[in-house]
Picture: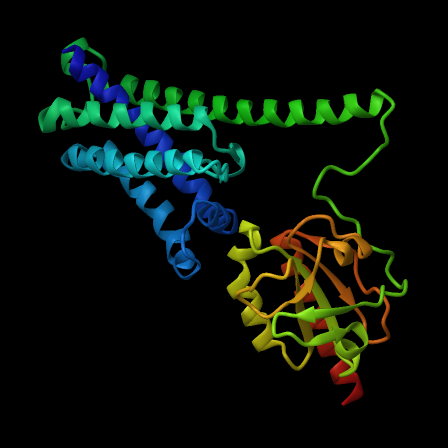
Length: 339
């Protein structure tokens, strides 16, 4: 009897975990792609994996709640959790700490021993359901054992789910408040007021863009004046080869360069002199990014054909997408006016 009750509770907890994890990943596939890059998934598989993973998690959550499929759902949950646990342990052993976007923005933090312990416990819960067997997995209500009506059981289950979600949200809010308090304490102590790390404002719009000359990944020397010579708008995109968000949006940037080639030019600027997978201009230690006030990656800034800054710094994939859309619209309108 005890094993039956514990098995049912384990199924409910696992169903909530997989449901929240799948739903939040599916709601923000860009962050899911970034997480997968951080864990070493190949770029060619990102598009499929970013949708397949959350769909698999939602399928497992549904299976755990349906008696005929609950035992198979427990086996799938144990397999997925074992895979996740192995990936976390492997990265920790290599000294890498990619963001675990397991619950989307509700709880996105770098992996650590606590992440590994959490996954080990969840894996143990899934294995407990498997050990309890198919007969225990077929049970979804306890009214026949404890005299609880189905309506009461449903209400109690809903209350447990709501409580778990509230605890996740509260934990995320406490993390945010803790980070904000650290920033405020640093300012109160007399330190200089600075933007949070990774934030960029960019140079004032209309100001003259800093001129430069850099070697590209093919060995040629390229200047800003050469980039502006065709008379098109130029978006300077600052990236790094070890930046997961940069890698995650690499294919998207390639599509922009192909689709919008007649309207604007998107030029990658990467750190270092090592070979890069995509064509890029190479800065040594971020000196050009600093000149354009782009302190994090990916970060983009628009330079108009007259050599003046045309936008604030766009920090992150979402802001860069918005900048590309605005630039394409503006270039299209200009083309209609001059036609």
